[in-house]
Image (cartoon, rainbow, N blue to C red; front, side, top):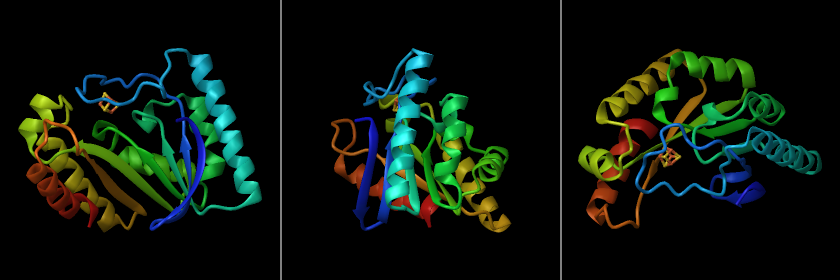
Length: 197
Ligand code: SF4
């Protein structure tokens, strides 16, 4: 569902902003759940997102939220520039969460995001889905092999050494027949240890 939602849970109070995006440039995952959030129409994407971001700004005028979580059903980096620009006011000096495929994430793109948005902290969510590479690549068709996982692991250590205000979060998929429960449990343990701690 598109729009803005104020949520108060164990992560604290945050404003969730669900934007419209273009179809994901990868577009081959066998389980891809995103349909409503997408459009091929640039005008539709831009004007829908302007409306949602304005709604978010009005909410913040009434009640500040120190944490903003943006979802767009694919990668943040594939949003149109008009949307990227309008999110600046939301992100500045707040904890700013985005989601992205791993190929967009490197030290240059991280530094560019930090410099452009000036967030207190940037949280990047990546959908590795499952630790088992055969399931991820052959059954889910994710297009993110373990070499990507290893690269993001090294990047996590690099940003830590540089003292950049970055956290990586990982999506783990569960509840679908391709992934047995023990693989879900393994994924949570290993991916949390590699990327989130
Ligand atoms: S990367 Fe995400 S948005 Fe793109 S096809 Fe896969 S599940 Fe869908």
